[in-house]
Every structure is written in structure tokens, then in C-alpha cells.
Amino acid sequence: MTDLDRDVDAVVPDERNRARPGRNHAAPPLPAEPLAEPGKALPLVFTAPKRNKPARHWIDLTADERTQAVVDRGHKPFRAKQLNHQLFEKHNTDPAAWTEIPAAARDQLAADLFPSLLTEVSTQTADQGATVKTLWRLHDGSLVESVLMRYAATDTSSGRSTLCVSSQAGCGMACPFCATGQGGLQRNMSSGEIVAQVIDAAGRLGRGEVTGGPGRLNNAVFMGMGEPLANYKAVMGAVRTMTTPGPDGLGMSARGVTVSTVGLVPRIHQLGDEGIPVTLALSLHAPDDELRDELVPINTRWKVDEVVDAAWDYARRTKRRVSIEYILIKDINDQASRADLLAQVLKKRGDWSWAHVNLIPLNPTPGSKWTASRKSDEREFVRRLEARGVPVTVRDTRGREIDGACGQLAASQR
Ligand code: SAH
Image (tube, rainbow, N blue to C red; front, side, top):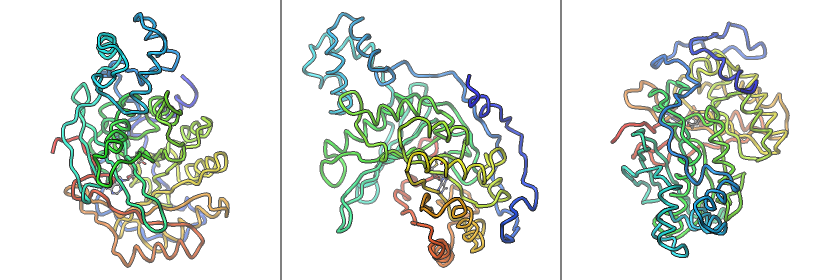
């Protein structure tokens, strides 16, 4: 166990070290309104149960282990390359399609090294077929979802496609506005289970099954179910496979992969050490500790200043601009004073556009009293950030009608 593991694992669920008044010395006074919806107060859970791991899959093996596995079964080493090619370049998950491999060998290799990881339960589409949400059943019955979004080319940008992937069945981070967070953590997903979602999406696009004709998968964002940095090892294994050039990996560009986190500070530093410059997204949602303690409970462990410092350091080291995610919740975190404070929190660390703010209108979870901000408040929030030179965009709300939008993924069979 490393020191980082110890630091992350040492957090006891109920250690809710609440913000003391007056912590943010530089902050303008903020409205101290009571929260309209405390949510279910759930404990923070870092350590997923070890049970129910899937069988080891080809994707989980290193390049050397793959060759060895093939040789151990009496085949020539080049079969490993053929299998990689089928899986990572052709996205063929059905062994019957691996026609350059003799049928008997193919069947044996598939049975031994390609256990079934994901079973499709249902697929729903929205936005004229350009948004596709898939509900998957894992081998132990856990349910997870992934959402594929395709954007048509415009005059100013070429078309692109993004897959929102899950990294855990459920989530232990207990954010009160998030459907997944309110359901608790079932277990970590394996690298194979994570990458299998990506291979499926790349395959659908390649075969022309998604509105817009045959295409490629450009981006993958760890914004589905789970806290990716709480499942660090499997997520990094998946990222490596996704960014390794073919035939050994999916050949995606690192900048096309976004890891989104509530802010596990030691893990953000560790991610910066990896030398794979993925895009980091930080779910900040409030610029002050008092409110962030409520909205993102991990803030009781790592405060706004610490987590923004870690994000800034990541940007400095990787030269990748960090995305600051900020949900807009009506009358909770959308006041003009919070926009000013957010700009101040980001700008005081440097004026080189190291961060970009991505505002997300809240997608209310079922039964939630909270709603998205008024359009006028949203505009004022944007205006105040822009006035201070902070780059800002407002996220579109793809897939809302199929519960495929941010924060709506829940492990229930609909
Ligand atoms: N655990 C990671 C990744 C999963 S959530 C994280 O928190 O970053 C991906 C993004 O969706 C996060 O920014 C999260 O805060 C946001 N989100 C969660 N619930 C939401 C909701 N109900 N409406 C809008 N965005 C939501």
C-alpha cells in the first residue's frame, strides 16, 4: 500500500469536518441560506467490496501477458496480435468474426480469455438517434450505463462523438444532487468492463449504427456512474488501453479522454505523475467550503483551496487546461456573489487560462426539490465569469428525456 492509498483510505465515513465560519478570508459575504434539500446524508465510501470481480479478460492483460496466454495454450505468438487487431481495431467482440483464426483455436481462446463482461439489457435513443444510452448488466447482476453522444459537423467544427463511461457500479461519494451518488457504491469495475463500453460504442459508430453514418469514437469521458479516481488502478489500466496505439490498444488521443472527479487530491497528483495527459475535470460546484461541504461531501476532507491547487498543479504539469464543472442549482449556488468568488478562486492561481468553467444546468433527480437556475441567473453567472476573463461554456443537456443526462444514471432497470 502506498502513502497515497493510505491517505485516501484513511478517511472515515463520518469524519465530517464541517466548515467553520470565516474560513474564506478573501471571500465576499455569501448568502447563508439554508439548503432547500439536504438530500439523504450518506456516508462517504472509498473502499469498494472486493467481491464479485469479473473473470480476468484479455483486456486486463499486459501485452506480454497476452502473448504468453496464447503461447501457453499451444498457439503461435502472432495470434495475440490478431486478437488485438480484432478487438481494438475492428471492434469485433464476436469470436465468429475472427475468421483469420482457425475455428477450433478461436473457440478455445474465446472461452478461456474472453469471458462475457457486459450484457446489454436495453438501449434507448434520443436526439433523433444521435444520443444512445445503454444499460448493461455485469456478470454479478450489477447494472451500469453508458451514453454515446454524436455531434454533427457545423460550419466551425467537424463532427465528433463522445462516450460517457461508467467506472464503478454505483458511487460512494454521496453527492445529494446525483442519482448515482444517492444509490451508494456496489463495486469497482474492472479495466475490461470499462474498456468494453468503449469498444461497444466504437463498434456501433464504425458499423454505421448511429445516426450520421459510419464514424469514429473521438472522446471518452469518465462522467458516467462512479468516481473514477476511487477506482484508480482499473481506470488507469483502461486509460492506457484506450490511448495505446493499435493494434495493442484503441489508439484514442489522451486529450480526448477526460477523467472527472469530485476531488480526491492525492489521486489528482498521482494522475499528473502518469505522463498520460488526459483532460482533468473537477466537479467543483461551489467556490466556498461552507456550501461545497454540503454539495460535494468529499469537501469535508479536501477543501476548495486544496482541490483547486491540485487542479492548477495538474494543468501546470500537463499543459492541459482543466475543466471546472459547476452545476447551476436555482438559489443554491447560482448567486452573482458566487460567480465572482469562483472567478477569484481560479484567477488568483494564475492568469494563463489554466481552467475553463463548464456550467451544467441541474438535471433534477426524481423527487428532487432542487431545479436548474433561472435563465436570467445563468446569463448573469456567465457574464460575471467572462467579465473577469474566465473562459466559460454552458453544457447542452443531451439525453434528458431518456434519463441519460449528467447525474441521472441510476442502477435501476427501467
Ligand atoms: N464522480 C465523478 C464523475 C461522475 S459525474 C464526478 O463527480 O466528477 C459527472 C458529472 O455530472 C459531475 O460533474 C457531476 O457533478 C455531474 N452531475 C451529477 N449529478 C448531476 C445532476 N443531477 N445534474 C447535472 N449534473 C450532474
